[in-house]
Image (cartoon, rainbow, N blue to C red; front, side, top):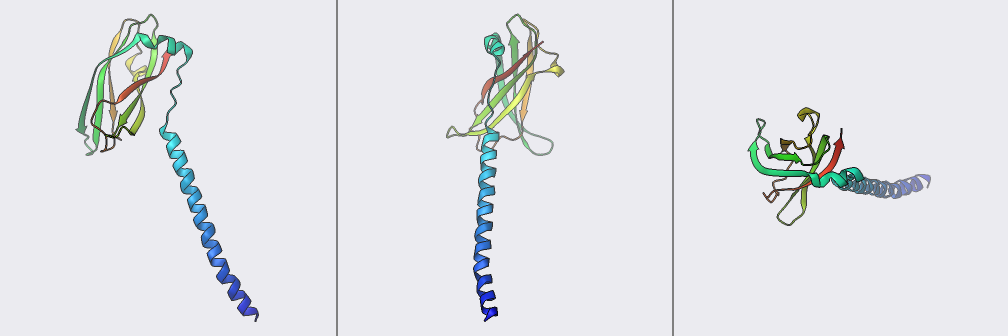
Length: 156
């Protein structure tokens, strides 16, 4: 009789363990999706000083090209110029580029530095060329110019 009780409790235990495992996996999948979604959203937080100065920065001649890298990956490249029409020297400028699909959904949102230490900053009245390569753009991309938003400005 004792073996029947043991057999019955082990039969009940298996579905319980399976249910716990399924709930745990579902919870992990949910947490992963939440983290992945929040990682894709970048908050643009300009300082009040940068917000006041942003009108002095002008992007011009922005062009987009696609080519294959030497590793066979598709690379989308934005080139253009950035001008500092204000009276302050700038150490760095970062831009967020947002690529969309044909339905208007975001397929890539990536931050890129257009002016930095490598370029030597951007003096008042100066214009410099920039290049932003992107190798993670989805094939679903609508093949149009992405939205460019200045995300940060650092002054010297």
